[in-house]
Length: 243
Image (cartoon, rainbow, N blue to C red):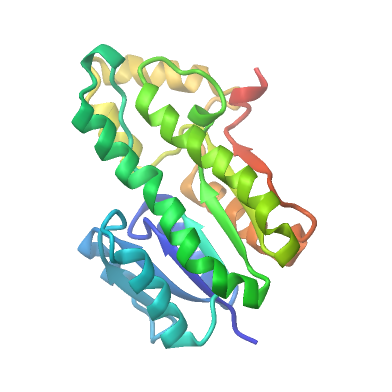
């Protein structure tokens, strides 16, 4: 039996590493990203890239439908697409609020809702990408933290709601991860070097996690090795929240 996954935010960083690791594990993958770079993941029909905006109304149903049409089943949904915002609340507009929620929260709900009937059939699972920002307070991340807090709570709620149907729902909560996503945010800081020093100082291991370290945690939560785990938020944060 060959398993099938849908991965959002798949073109770069954590999502790209998840696609690579799932493919190595023998999954067929539908890889979704707004960036045309997602097409680079195409691999002999085993990885099907879809360039689409996860926040668009039609995307979740269309992507899940394509996965089932192409491969006949769905075993795993990885809700990884995300948007970062570091800004004091007094400088945060309503448009900022709506834009971050449109990518970080609504698609998690809508992709999961679209996927669940198929995951029930396969006794599959959902893994969400949350953040330490959804678990602890971090200055100037009010809206971003709200979105990741929503992902954390939805993960827990759905774990309870779906347990009887044999569907597991978990999340990873990364700290700082060495991705272009993080580098873009860093370049917007008035003093990027000082900002980096603070970030590294807040992580007891003294470095950022790699995208692949987070991807390995996601793949573990999707694997039979984690069959007794649901409703868990697995921090991949170099010890950040243990301080």
